[in-house]
Image 1 (tube, rainbow, N blue to C red):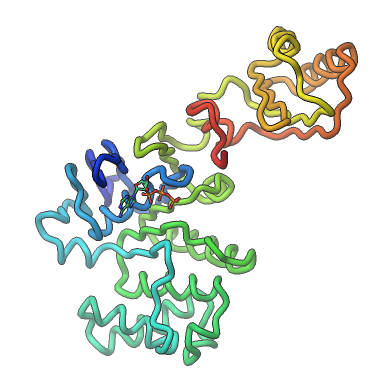
Image 2: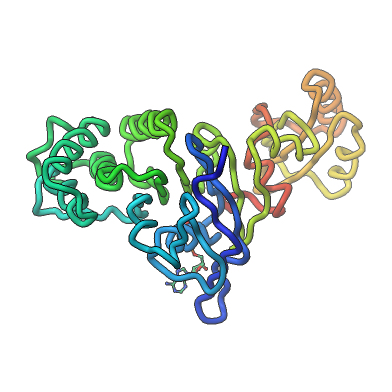
Length: 313
Ligand SMILES: Nc1ncnc2c1ncn2[C@@H]1O[C@H](COP(=O)(O)OP(=O)(O)OP(=O)(O)O)[C@@H](O)[C@H]1O
């Protein structure tokens, strides 16, 4: 299959600050690429360059071989943007908002009216067609904004933190809709700093920090880079001393031992053996445990391994 979206060597600086440094990736039809990184990682700037909102200092973006720099009109007809800040006209009813976005793309009236009703139904807001966004919840406004980005039937949809300020019910409705768009063959780029969203939605993940790509791949590919498959999180009554930390690291079952924010984060492959050795060590060291939690290693562990920091440090 051929990639529909190609991003090659994007760079962007604001004064002396390099917001994006040499970012390249491809997205295929029917695929969601998760762009994951903490605040200020450069996600929105990357999206902005793909959407044609800000020009890159270097690099290029193409959809289906059409370069934004060469044929902006054709490129923009094939891309939809759901911006981080909701962009709606509060004084226009929901349906009219969608029609306005479609008119900006020069859609013929009959097609536009049919498409506007179709995308409103897709986001579950048909019954609110005549209501103004001012009366909508944060989640409903976000869903309407997604409908506006879809009205011209783009091949590529860019979503910049689309669940910010969204209630859990609307969040699930958005996720279901994104799954449906993937099934319809759309290519999606989804930025977030919530690893749970990426783990639920993404076919491939690109991890960014300080404007740079740190790693990319499918979730199993990224997890395979970790020293261990399981993670134990341990809250103790008191922090372990540096000497005790060395003792813990000497336990063969523990592949990774990190202490941060009053919590021990331990990587291990064999939960049974590892927990037994650990408990024995804790009893011998006289360390009372306040809380213990285990789970499969996740993207938080990958980010920690790559940067030495947690996603939400
Ligand atoms: N218009 C601008 N002028 C100056 N600096 C900017 C501008 N836009 C972004 N930056 C800087 O570029 C860097 C990347 O910001 P960007 O918004 O792309 O990050 P982000 O990963 O989307 O973060 P967030 O999750 O907080 O939205 C940051 O250091 C930010 O301060």
